[in-house]
Image (cartoon, rainbow, N blue to C red; front, side):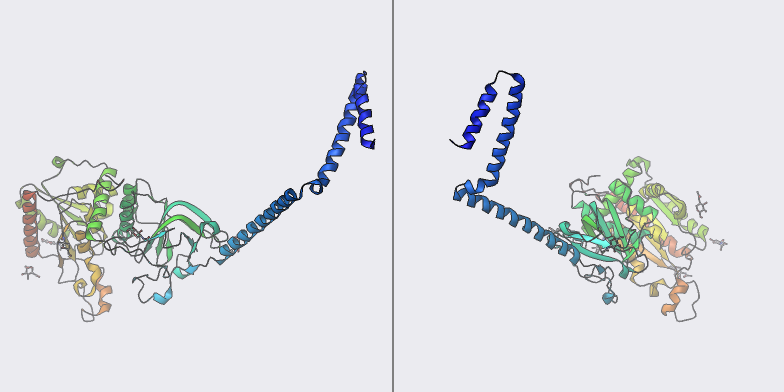
Length: 471
Ligand SMILES: *[C@@H]1O[C@H](CO)[C@@H](O)[C@H](O)[C@H]1NC(C)=O
Ligand SMILES: *[C@@H]1O[C@H](CO)[C@@H](O)[C@H](O)[C@H]1NC(C)=O
Ligand SMILES: *[C@@H]1O[C@H](CO)[C@@H](O)[C@H](O)[C@H]1NC(C)=O
Ligand SMILES: *[C@@H]1O[C@H](CO)[C@@H](O)[C@H](O)[C@H]1NC(C)=O
Ligand SMILES: *[C@@H]1O[C@H](CO)[C@@H](O)[C@H](O)[C@H]1NC(C)=O
Ligand SMILES: *[C@@H]1O[C@H](CO)[C@@H](O)[C@H](O)[C@H]1NC(C)=O
């Protein structure tokens, strides 16, 4: 008889004992002994197991080990990816002689998605970015070559990076975000993109001018964005040059409305006009409108009329000749945004000197007329830029009825084609020619009358069909 069986027999007798306290003691001893036997068995178990099962267990263990090392390897690769994210300067000085061409000097290593007639843009992440996100770094508001961009996979964002959720609009503007016209040119392509993408709204904007950060737009532009998207825009401020910011989804525009067909531009202006009128709560009843509204939108300072009352009188006289014509004289400098929207709603003929206030023309009903005035010297020296409101009128469905160039004005000591004269002429003021203005006004009013009689023009057409962007 083995030692173990003798022991178990004794235990059994003990358990069978009639004394309760003894029973408990026996039970404790039994449990202790069983535990001992169990632990003895577990340590020796592999040796007692059949070889096949043993092999299987060993394999399992190995695989587990491999799995762990695989994980460490992946982590190592991720760390390397993270470290290898390379930031390039936003402004590439190698292309400073052609900053606006092709890939431009802004994010010069990347190319836009260009579909004929559509807005030129870049999207991140996308197939062409190999699903990488856009990351930006730098706080410089004076030199764009000290701000940076990089692409990174979401699993391997650069060291110290933070992730901004939602949609971010990144705008490159060669000009000024304070100026109504130039700012609008920067906004238009984003709205065009939204129109084709379920009206998706940006959570924030990042503004660059020559790669330099900007943190605000002019008030009129803020209002246009607020009206269009139903929320005030947030302009991202970068605060720490060591902390990159990556974007869950980013749309980058660097060609303004370049590449967009006239049709696409008109869609955007139709939407802006309609949204602005809703935002300002302007009712669209035809009865509240004069039959023909003629508006003199005045400037103060540079490019204002030298003799306002003389100019007003000419147009007043011509307007009086036409039944139902009403003349309004307003100053752009002290109108609120909604006053401007309302004024343009009433205007069929906008009479105004060359200047940012003319940007309001996009808010008139389609097919309305614009008459523009420029000081001496601009015709020969101001370059193509002086035509922006002719383009703006065409793109928004208006009729630009011509420009009057004042033949008299500031005296320049050089010949009047010398570029140095532009600084003399730039802020010149504008005179008048009673005969010419009268004749011109009569002719434009005549055309407006004919258009109104025909009344076949499709005005203020809103593309209700565009997903989610109805107005
Ligand atoms: C480019 O844009 C068009 C729509 O305009 C889109 O269908 C296409 O997928 C885009 N391509 C890339 C590479 O993003
Ligand atoms: C990360 O941020 C810390 C603290 O601002 C800074 O000291 C460090 O240089 C940064 N690392 C990188 C790679 O930028
Ligand atoms: C403005 O023009 C009117 C003529 O239309 C003239 O009588 C008046 O003197 C002019 N005012 C100035 C300040 O030149
Ligand atoms: C608006 O500005 C013009 C020019 O500065 C001024 O003549 C006019 O009185 C102003 N109107 C109001 C309502 O402040
Ligand atoms: C705009 O310009 C295009 C060509 O440049 C022309 O065909 C079109 O008639 C113009 N539209 C208006 C309203 O002037
Ligand atoms: C005013 O315009 C008329 C008509 O175009 C022109 O004949 C006349 O020479 C102009 N007057 C001046 C002073 O420029």
